[in-house]
Image (tube, rainbow, N blue to C red):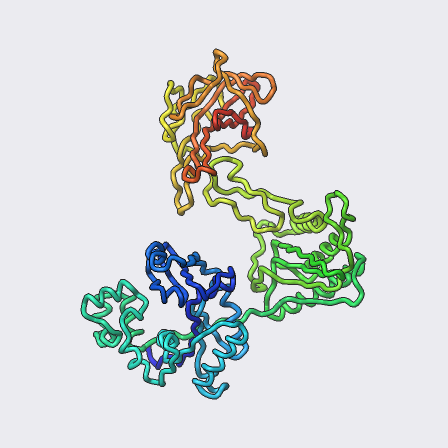
Length: 568
């Protein structure tokens, strides 16, 4: 690559994971605090360092050096959320900020230095502004390239233009941030970045690979990577305040259309559209109302207006507080309305369905169901999503209409023939590998696949112990208690080794009449969360066919027979 590295200003907040824990979780950073990841210290407070705590120590050793140490688990999401105000404060003075990691961000030094009166003046101004705006201490380093600027920030130093290679030369190889490479270089007698940079580039590439070659360029001060500047988020929210509180549906419809057109024009100005819309309202008495609407297609101005009108209609025509399906009506009219676009994407970024999935009929159904949700609440209309799990109840998740249809557990669809079933087997069952099936007629599930399903291609969880197909048609919300007897009238029991005491012959559900069992398959064992005694669950499932043609899914848990589902 040609050219010289970009002159870079980097702002660094020392011990940021510790400060983030204080900002978000209230852990005092002035005390001895250590942030752990994989049982090792990744950051610690100044007082903890004074007690001998260092990065890389195991938790027990760190607590041995500092018994009063407060331990916090590493949370990159928490670090990023807490760092956002710092980045926003920087963007008040400079443009083109790149977040290197939570706790460090960089910007090309040319603009701030010219605008603020030089590099040192810019560094001082940024440190002061962050301290006043966010109450966070920081240090600034300026050098040629992001890597050198980060090391300069730790020393609070401004490296002269062209002096970056000399500045890096005296630093230890551990400054590269590659522990394995640094250990190998030390064993080879290479102890400083200058020693490493003096090695021929071709030999470094041949011996240490591409990552070693990149580290060699950084050590020599040849950091030519351009800054990936952060684009400040555009404020697309629209808000309207009303002098006269809105307490009538016709007035709400007028207000909804005006605000919807304003939002649509703002989105169109950026070439955007939204698929999810947040509606917020504040009443005259300070009550805050919020609802999110989702749409399968792009929300037009009319679609946005309809949803705002439906939502205001639902709020303003709610119940008077007595028991009923509708939520309580607000105690006063709406004085402020706010629309928040979410799920924003490019205007041409949504492809219509080839076979009419987003056609007129679907749109009419969506409008009707969405309006029901606006009146009765989002949980009033739900759809089923299939996912992974071992039992039919685990595989189904009910989500409100319009919400993202994500399964509760990842997993493939049931795989037929995942294991073998031994038909007409005799007395013993060998664990989860084989399932015993014995049927006198066309029993439900006789000869079906059983046991532990093999993992399909694609890396999805195999869910050992998953029931074989077909899936039951009706899954009972609460299993029904039942008893199962053999031909001699004795209760059928399952041993710890999954041995069935006798062939099931009769089934009694609750206080009902006995029904003859003409076919059965199983058992399929499930031993879940055995490592957590409070959540452990062990049971065995059976498929049975009754004389009247009914097929049931039974389970045995703690000696109790249960009816879990019904087959067609």
